[in-house]
Each structure stands twice: as C-alpha cells, then as structure tokens.
Amino acid sequence: KQEVTQIPAALSVPEGENLVLNCSFTDSAIYNLQWFRQDPGKGLTSLLLIQSSQREQTSGRLNASLDKSSGRSTLYIAASQPGDSATYLCAVKGGGADGLTFGKGTHLIIQP
Amino acid sequence: DTAVSQTPKYLVTQMGNDKSIKCEQNLGHDTMYWYKQDSKKFLKIMFSYNNKELIINETVPNRFSPKSPDKAHLNLHINSLELGDSAVYFCASSQANYGYTFGSGTRLTVV
Image 1: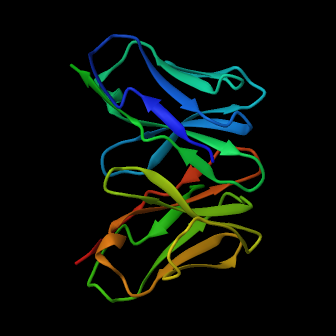
Image 2 (image 1 turned 45 degrees about the vertical axis):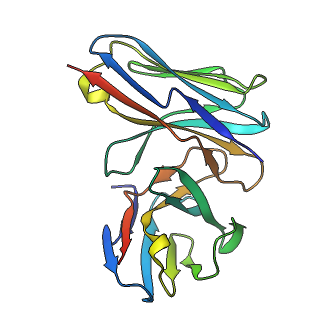
Image 3 (image 1 turned 90 degrees about the vertical axis):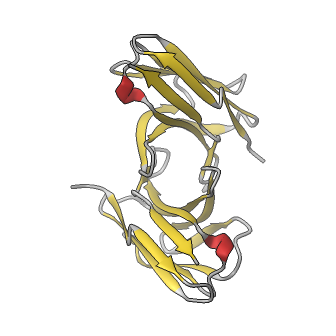
C-alpha cells in the first residue's frame, strides 16, 4: 500500500528565503506526482504535475523535482513571499485506476 | 469557467438525517472522485467513478453511496449521518495520467 510522507510538517521562515519541501513515497511504481496548495478553509490548487518519466517541472518561482527510483520529490520555492503561506500537499498517482495518495502536508508560514 | 463545482459549500445537519452533496465537472474528464479531509486535514480517497462504474471503495461505510447519472456528475449520498461524518468532502476529476482538478469542498457538520 502506497504511503506518502512530507517533511517538515510545519515551517516558518522570513520573507525572501528560498526553501525546500520534501515528499517521499514507498512504492516507486507511480504514474505521476502532483503538488497542491491549500489555503485555510479552501480547496486544493494544483501547482505542478510531474509525470513518472520526467525529472522536474517549473512554474514561476516553483520548481518540483522527482526521483522515482528513490521515492522522493522536492518542491523548491524561490524568494518566498507572505502570499506563499499555505499548506502544501504532495500526492502520487499509482497504476491503473488508483486515485491519488496524499501526504499530510507541510504547513508553511512566510513571515513579512 | 472550466472547473469542478460542488454544492453545497456548507452543510449543517442533525444526526440520523440523510443528505446529498452534488458535484459536476465540465472538463470532459473520464474519472471522478470523492475525497474526505478529516479534522487533522488528512485527505483520503472514498470513491472513484470511471464511465459510470465504481472503481474504488476504500473501506467506506455503506451509508455512503456515490451516484453518477452521467460522466460529468458524481453525487454523494449519505444516510443516517453520524457525528464522525463531520469533515470536508472534496470532489475531483482526472483524465488518464493527467493531473487532478479538485472542487472547493463541502464542509459537513453533523450536530
């Protein structure tokens, strides 16, 4: 059974810092990995999708990498801003008709 | 707007009642899902539907029943609501190996 772990569970940093959020998964037989953002009381916003054949994806200040063989992904946020404060969720899609398996998230606070 | 929309956004009801949450997607996706986010914010899949066929049922009580009248809709019916059913329920859709799109969630409170 797939398990997804996110480290750290919470992170508070001053504005402007570059930071890395970590995600690991136990079963490397995945189709893709998706990073989401969730603001308090809101739904999930997709940030980046990495297919199993890809190594990384970039969108603006966000860069996500995938090392499928070692079961790891990182989300790099450059020049963090207070508006980046949210919970960041990592989710992997297994084979066939499996849905996404989520980690418990990293609660990120960017201090002005 | 292309999206996954679910209604209602908030639902407060008494124990023992039966309620439904509706979900619609206009993305043309083949598969739709229901996820539950518990009080600890952990998201777990409940059901998925592909071409009107139930694919996954992850140890969800049979008081919960998904109903899909067509490819664009997946409604969630809950019978005999219990206090422990209080949570945020998210609908989502996906196409093949592409990413998932989530609705904005329905916060269910059972009193």
